[in-house]
Image (cartoon, rainbow, N blue to C red; front, side, top):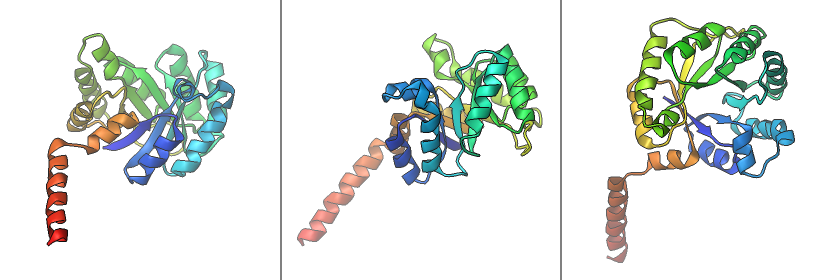
Length: 228
């Protein structure tokens, strides 16, 4: 499983990249606004993220347009920022049409806000490079987001989908709207290709009480050796 960081915070991205486990970044104008960013500077900020992670690390940047022509135009502008930019497009009728057009032009698309198997299959047929089923949003309404994710992973896995860009890479499923390390564990067990996680969840994935206890014991033994 690859790990994408869901953030617009450059410091978080730099820190996660230093661990050697960062497979990509997903972001949007809302996340950028949380750190004080403005919409008219969003494209420049995407460029700064791409510089940090390097050309082999995909950066999903969300279009804020709502009609197919506007999404395509916005997507082409985003894709021109750097070769590793992936355009995030919502799963809707206009989004499907825009995804098909962008894919035909060689622009990889991450279809987001996906909740059902039919939505995922339509996104795959449209030529998406990534599909992002949302787990936590289901949990917010007391539904089982992991069960929905598993159904999508199984359904997409029944077919040999590739995207429609010039690269023709294998379609990948991103477990999105991840709220906990357990979400990541279950997504990995069911075969999701990627988990996109907030920085706080990524940090918690490294931690465990037994690890902490073992480190405490190691330091205590080391202090005894030093004092001998």
